[in-house]
Image (tube, rainbow, N blue to C red; front, side, top):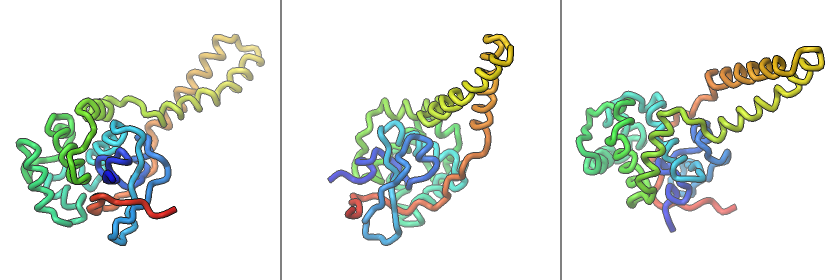
Length: 220
């Protein structure tokens, strides 16, 4: 059986979280029976691209990893388990990576950032990760371009639908239809911008335990 990180298209073997759901993960994570007794779980993504987006977004936004030295960040990620082995594994697969490499946006926008994500996915899965090169590149573009996720698009659609009664009421009160539509569009835009830029639910900052080697779900 393939490792959980491959089966669930989750290259970073991330736990279920608000950030994972932001990138399209199922709301309910799968609990792992990995013999560690830590209550580990793993987020389930519909595509490799979405799983890679979440992996990258976690590294670049979490206070545990953002702008930290590689050696310090990977120690937190691994739960301080087999840190030097993890460091050596990644350095062997990411040209130019050192313990002192700063994992900032410049790093994540580069080819070195993609190489690291691939190396980490390999380490978590216990084998070279099967996502094609195009998926890693697409995920990197998506995270840094601000392309809306399916969840964002859905919220925008709901917002637009919710202003229909306002448009109708305005028109019935004597305001011309074009003006009523313009008012409704402005309300929808303001609502969307408020949602987009307001603080959202914080992503849990649980240090990442050394999750995956092949793991199986608990019996249902």
